[in-house]
Image 1 (spheres, rainbow, N blue to C red):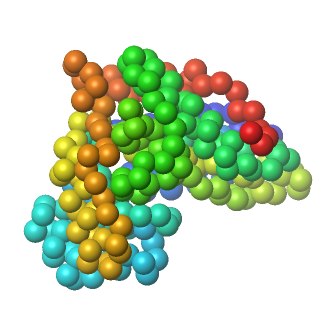
Image 2: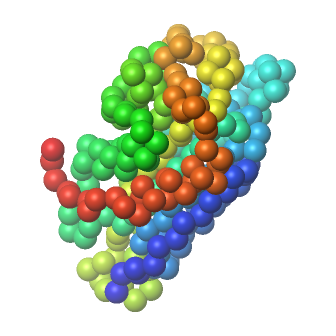
Length: 250
């Protein structure tokens, strides 16, 4: 039998390393059959540049020293992509859900489903967003959320093929789990957050130009920014009210 339990974890101040550990713990709980859905919301407690795994972004002593001089720590993540700045004033979302049995995973459907949920969060605040790339932004992708053409949310996604939990039948030996992640700019200075990314690009030999002006924080579009716990609650409501996942090409 598949687990039906769901969990929501919310951390208004958490180190990046601890957040990654908690994400891995949720993955293990799904693999063990304790959960089939989880939502992790967290805000970093310190300025940290998250670098992807692999040799493209080597953590050289020169890079560490240069980032430290700017007041930034470094943290690695297991997946690829590009450097992402994390600091207070950014909210992160990790959403894990078991993909429907015997249904092929379709990345466009999965991304659009995730973005629809995130857009409903902004709709609760009276803000319209569009989905698409944002040239000049850090860690750019086809499924950013933009306000008036400026990036406010970056998304990422990967699929996990996990062993089924205890009590599963032979036909359920593996289950597909979607891990969708989002990084929301809430109240961050865009010039400040792109500085470590630009420095990292320079020292790692990448020519990508990162432009602060193509980013925008949520606070710039509200007369009064809700407290972090209120934003967590609105995000939680958006996920609780999400539409059913309809799988298939779109």
